[in-house]
Length: 215
Length: 258
Image 1: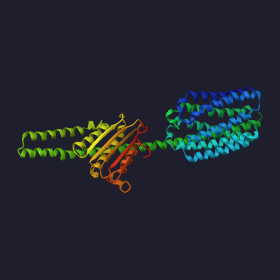
Image 2: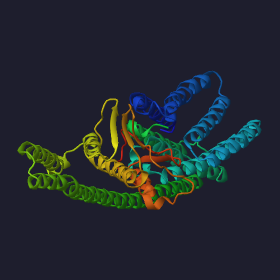
Image 3: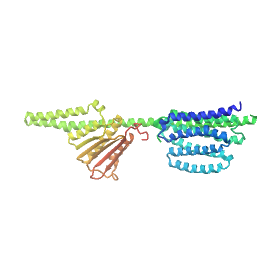
């Protein structure tokens, strides 16, 4: 039983990643003219790295931590770039540039020691939350509020907020209680958070309308 | 899984669930509140828009009454007086007949122009064209209307606003500008309608003039109401030019920021 759980959970996460990428591909025309178009590529890369490349490398070399660390850095920088492109206020853009530079420095410094990798995630995720706040503020002060459920960027931001707001205490508390996700029961929390993340993406791709995705 | 792990699991999952639920509720409440506020604002803007349209319609009607009164008194009345004088001075029957024919013709044109059904279904081009013809017919001012490009049907409420703006401009030209020529251009471009009205009258210094008296502010705010922009260019003794730019295929008819 205890051997069975990790497989189910690992495959379930891959299934969510795959479903989100497929649905993003089907509805691509609706958001092709916006910065969100790059999420299609991002989701396929995520699926490829997390579900194919990671396990493949894992077979020959159990230490595939660097692959995931590299992917984590890339994904955060991708989110920062995305927020940079969709935010209109200049002050926000400047803050993103500064914070991105800080992130890169801390990411490299933390990368030296494998034990510190999780701090890069916490720092990166906290920055994503800040930028998500900027974007929600921008949406909040626009007429998009009236059609918010059709706005893809809102769903992506909601997904990132919910995922990261869950992930940050999860990592911090796991360390505090000295338990970790390798324990399959804790994997349920990870699965749940992934479900929320990709669930929001999927809802966003299905509900979005072309006329609202133009920047 | 020992007791400590179960305890940790419960604490961690409770914290995460609590945070997720709080975030979701906060997002929902915030956006719902904002949505209601926006809906109220839009409702208010819509009412304001409707009021402005009604005001413009009333003004157009008042202007029409003024024109009828003027035409009856100064045009048809004059012709009838002329016919009476001709009868009293024993002029030939043909001369009196000619004057009366002219009078009947003017009366017919006037009757046709003020028919409520015709006014209701009139397009912007038709309304402007009638106005221009009237100026030429009554020798008010030498006027010309040019329509460029493929005509595109725009919302009748917006047409009313544009017509009222033009009417105000014409009224200023006739009353104050001492102009001899008036040119109106309706330029339909693929994504834009540009309306230009210009006269060769006295003009004014845009920097010095108190604009409120001649309705410049009114014209600009009316244009803004329908998401159009109105700009004036004028110099003393070089005439005045009004340019209205309206982006076609606007989603909303009215401007909620007014």
